[in-house]
Length: 231
Image (cartoon, rainbow, N blue to C red; front, side, top):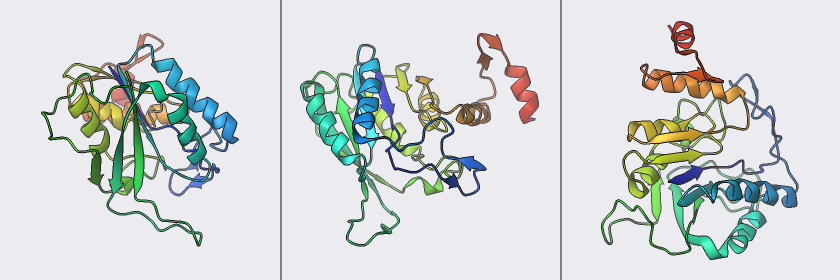
């Protein structure tokens, strides 16, 4: 029913992340030209538009993403629904002088162009467009993947905008936080990830959450193999 995802922000670096044992991405340098980055975002949105009711696109405003955010709102003006703001209670100050510290990230909402959401679970006048809470530094997987978000973020969107047993998609699955939230809330998640090194992180995380899950690779059941590996 929905796509909830957070694409790479085009942060302009692919440095080793402390304690992660490697690069942030093996297969994506996160340093595209503005035109290439905008095309990258559009191709992702276009791929899902025929299959989901609504898209929730979490993206932060930084130097190399800000113009693409504006262009996205123009490009998809006809299907733009609303903006939800993720306000983080704590953020690190910017390292360069003259730049505003940013506690806000956007969740751009696209769908049928109406502000009314198709499967809203909240009653009239009870849901606000600001989600407040700590950043992802408390997430145990933040050292593995620099661009994680906290569990409460997908939980909020999934529980408020989808029915039980709904299908949740995440095209940039990272360490699997959206998948965890969907499973805990009795929804089914289809996740994809740019970098194969995070696929194992996701599998390990899901087995830790629920060891009754079936793990398949290319249609072949590898559940016991994974359980033996993690025992």
